Amino acid sequence: MAFEPPQRLVRALGETAPDGDGWLEKLPEAARQAVDLRELTVDRVQVPGGRSSMVVLVRRADGTPAVLKLAPPRSRPEAERAALAHWGGLGAVQLLEGPETAGVLLLERLHPDVSVRSLAEAKALLEAAGTLRRLWVEPPAGQVFETVAERTGRQAEAMRSTAVGSAVSGVSALVDAALGAREELVGAVSEVRLLHGTFRQSKVLAGERAPWLAVGPDPVVGECAFDLARLVRDRVEDLIASPSGAAITRRRVRKLAESLELDAERVRGWSLFRAVESGVRALRVGRARDAELLLEFAGWL
Image (tube, rainbow, N blue to C red; front, top):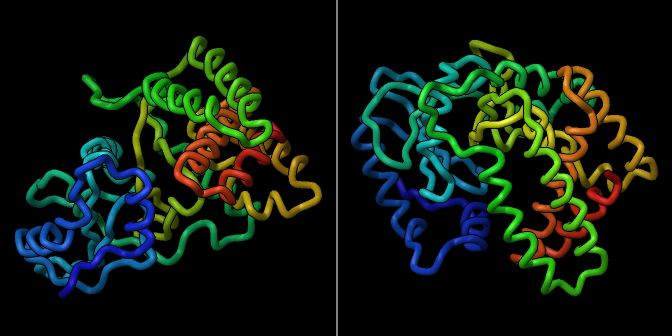
């Protein structure tokens, strides 16, 4: 079988690939080797798939359905492996036993085409929040995960440099507001948990042993409010199109914070920072439409 990476993955990694990176070119052969090593039978490559890894639907030697996931080093697959092992299937997809190869994960098969996003919005947010709550556990002893302060510190530097050279109106003011919010937030953290890191509705899939399970973490250690920020802006296109989008957004911040017993102002602050960071990053790689949506959304916060 030809293991051609989906075009969505090719485009996404092409925006961020460092000079000389040959991971995509080596991917078909790496997939073949991973399949042979684990004695898997391939059903199909998941399309359109994700933006940071290739997912292959496979079956193990005993016929059990599974998923083979291959990701480049910059997507931090080893951190994902460590987080999934620590969660042990509680609230998240189960890591399966087998040979360990850098950048390759063998996972239980969920229903890849049925995410919590398929539900009505209110129900989707409720189910997503309930799934997220189960993931917030004490980090493992001697944890190997990046902290929220470390990750957002790197992002802050990139935001500053992009804002300085941007001709887009209002970007500098939003970046200043986002960076100010971050400084306050990282300076006053009372409780630290292992976080999903990139949680949103599409990261929660239907399963057999549990109705909904999280997939695709980019784990980080820090306060829980950080993990809600991406969920706050889910379905951002619909929010922007709605005449009451700003009010809906502020109400969503309050409801999510209340449902998970968090400080709404901290959820708002991290939602602002992460929306501006995503918008500025979209500007940097030439995705002007995405940048416009994200920065307009950030302005509501």
